[in-house]
Image 1 (cartoon, rainbow, N blue to C red):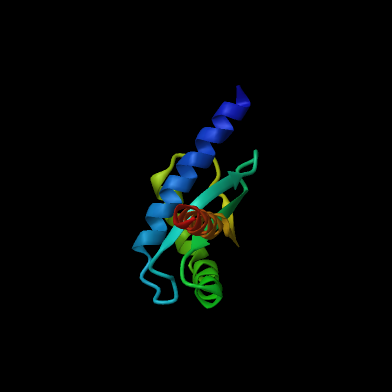
Image 2: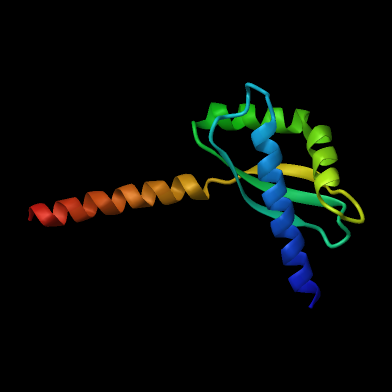
Length: 118
C-alpha cells in the first residue's frame, strides 16, 4: 500500500516540476527539456529528478547549472502547488534515455531501408 502512495507522489512531483521548468525564464535552459522521472525519498526530504535535454552536452551542462541556480524558486513553487508534509530538495541529473531511443529508432529505420533495397 505504501508503494502505491510513493508512486503517486513521484508522479505528481514529476508533473509539477515539468510545469515549473517551463515557466523559468533563464536563457541557459534549453528549449526542449523534459522531466523523465522523479524519485522522492520516503521522508520527502530529497527528490532526484532525471532531466532529458535536447541540444548536446553544452546545453545539458547549461541547463543543469540554471536548474541548480533556480532550485529555491523551484522548491517554493512545488510547495505552493502540492500539499506535502515537507517540500523535497531537488537533485537534478541528466538522463539520456530519450536521445538513446531516438538513436535506436534512426538505426532501425536505416536497417529497414537497407532491407527494402535488397
